[in-house]
Amino acid sequence: MRFEQRAVVVTGGAKGIGGGCSRVFAEAGGLVAVLDLDGRAAAELADELTATGPGSAVAFACDVTDFAAFRETVDEAATTFGRLDAIVNNVGIHPPATTIDDSDLALFETTMRVNFLSTVAGSKFALPHLRRTKGAIVVVSSMTAVLGQEHSTAYAATKAAQVGFVKSLAIELGPEGVRANAILPSNVDTPLMRDWAATLDDPDSALDRVSKLQVLGRMASPEEIGRVALFLATEESSFLTGQAIEADGGAALDY
Image (cartoon, rainbow, N blue to C red; front, side, top):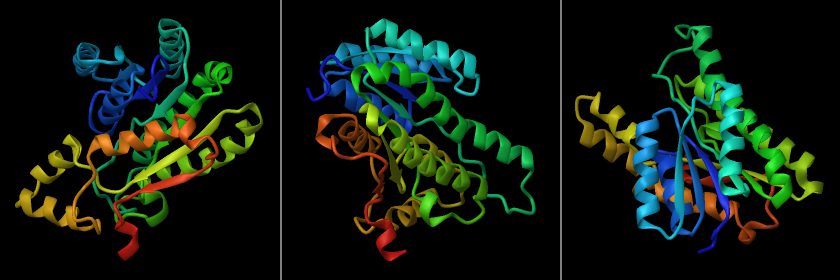
C-alpha cells in the first residue's frame, strides 16, 4: 500500500509498459487514471483494477497529441480523485526500421509529437496539481536514448530529448519540491514486442535473441518497469531527481 489513496495519471496506460504501471500503482493502493487512445482497452483495464483492488482506476480515452483535450483530461482526472501525486508519461510509438535516407521528415515530426511533445505537455498540464502535493513526474524513455539504435534515428532522438527535458525540469522544479526522473528500459515483453516478432520468419528465434541481449537472459515484464515507476513516485526515492534510471537487465554492460 505504498501509494494508498494517492493519485497517478498514466499515459498509454492500457497496454504494455503503461499497463504494467497502471497495475503496479493500483496494487499499491493508488487511484489510477488510465489514459489511452484505445478507450475500450482503458475501460476494461480500469474495471479489472477496481474489481481486484486494493486501489481503483478510472479510464479516459485520450489522444495525447491533441493538447487541448490532453489538458482537459489531466484536469478531469485530478478533479475526479481530488488530487494528483504523480504522472507517468509513458505513451510512445516506435516507427519501423528506416534508414535516414528513406526517412520522411513527416515521420520525424509525428514521432517527436507523440513521444516527446506529449511528455512536455503531460508534465506541464500536471504541474499545477503536483505543486500542491509535492508530487513526481516520471518519464518512460529508453536505453536507445544513450546507446542509439540502428535505423531508428527518429525514435532514439525523441528518447534522448526526454532525458534532456527531465534533467532540465528537475533543476527548475527542485526548489518547489517536485521531482522529475526518467526510466530507460531495454527490451520489455509487451504485445508490441510480440507483434514485431510475428512479422519475422522465425518469431520464437527472434524473441530468444532479444532476450539474450540482457545479461539476465530475459526481457523485463511491464510490471517490473512499473515497479521502478512506483519507486520514483514515492518517498522511497525522495532524494532522486533529474535521474535517468537504466532498467536494462544489464544489457548495456556487454554493449
